Length: 412
Image (cartoon, rainbow, N blue to C red; front, side):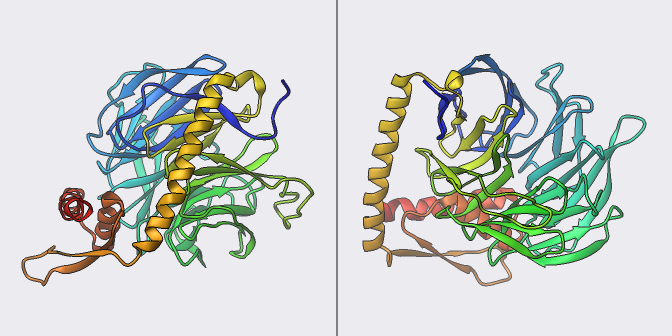
């Protein structure tokens, strides 16, 4: 059997999380981290070519965990989420208790990025700020800059490690901000009509990629011009990351897929040149939402989904699961695809069915109307409504329960 041109399932990690896997991170070819809505952070180590086992669960958030970053200096795993704090756990000791707690954000910490070159951690939050953190000489972590100016949740953050903007920061909501090292805004770019969910700095530091809620992956130069648009996703794109080996970018989203983009990038500092050959490899999942993706240096791809599953995908036949496992998985995908098509037909016939409810967020103001389409995800609606009106996590949870109470009888 020769290496394939298409990704095949290598393994599904077990046991699955008890909630959506909101973030995955390949720390090495043999070590993977995961973060989940079940409030846990998992560390998984390689047991064989096609198997990773759970080493430990890291504690401390007691709330949804949505973001991860690896800090080689000290060998820490940073995690953030609805607890509003950023916890640093030691990978050396595998202690379930954190060694550092970074306090400053006032809402969900939805994204993290660490710069090995600059030894800085940058975080983005629903509180409409990004924060830059660094370790002081006494080994304590402090916030050295608060990046303020966004009008919505900051979903994308990055630190530029090379090129003419070395040491600058990029953050995004609907707008993309470029900041200097002092935390001063240099440029503002129009990101997309919908929120930018993720940023990846490309080699050379003169271009970067964004994942957006308008189904598109865009590639920009550092001056703020779009130089390429990657079309393929059919719904929200939640994350885009740098690929490995021949793959330039990997993205994932709300359309059951992760996508590996290759055969398109020639000189990222100048322009994109298309070459012959397939541009996009589609990796199908049984879950609708693929929240997160990460790449191992060996070329394998790690994904985390709304079904609580972490999956690893490979082109290398030595790391591909056995034929029986792949056949079972293919049958699951076939069944899901069939049900999805039937659901699309039902949705088309029920497109006009909506539920109107009122949400009161203040005793001094009239209730706010909320229109929900039948079949919508209560959590996504509650989080979106909460971000729009600056509500606390506790209030968002109450709204989610309120929506469920109204939707369930309607769907009965």
